[in-house]
Image 1: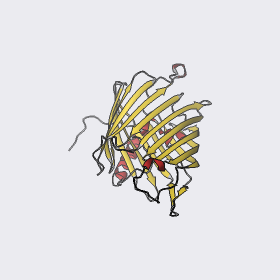
Image 2: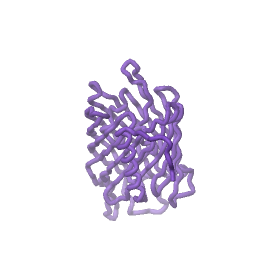
Image 3: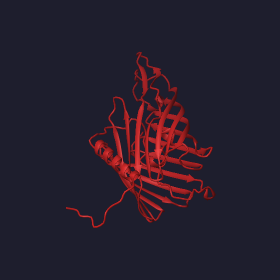
Image 4: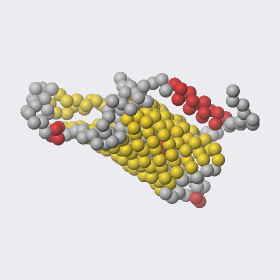
Length: 321
């Protein structure tokens, strides 16, 4: 039996956060994941603009993020993803705007997209609740010519194919200095892209499916030199397995983040981030694959973040998300 020598006092916000996260972890731990429907980042908590437009402007100042991910390194045609985002609050923090570019490549498939996000935030008794919309325009390309078959294959299209796919999304995001909860569908339209027709009359289609994201995290301030932060992200698409990421990280001396995570049915992850200055930070994550896909060099992810510091406006505290 565990006995506490001193009573534990928790604020109502902390009680809510802990119970919310525990409930989510217990619920989601029974779900399995068998595949990745669209690119996801292990260090997602440092830039949720790519999945939730309501995140725009939460940085309290101009903010920029650059990500690069190489999944299953060493495999020819393995997934590679990059994204660049910029965001800032507007008009006394009531509004926020963000813009990001995505580039994803998997084998002969390549996608390039640009997204503009706009958010409105209202102040609550504790924290802020934001609602966001985004407009997205992407181009999906199939590079059939890169296959170079040795034997004539009449099932291959005549030439490379390219299709555009405009879209829009919606999100909700609640946050305080220590807590965040988000729910979003960054691409609401489901589109069937028809590429080239083969000599035998077979059409090569590519379907874009709607995805839903649920994120949550809470920073527990142990003391001025140690902060523990559990967080989670759940992704779901119709007719696809649910994918769940859970992780915990620690901020040491307000300089170094060290963390570990688990993507159910897929991988175990290690993360580290170093705050070079109060504005500039770099991060790295390595994923150990737990599936049958082996004989590669793991998955590597690099992150660079920049935040404008505005001490005169009262923004002089470490960011936990």
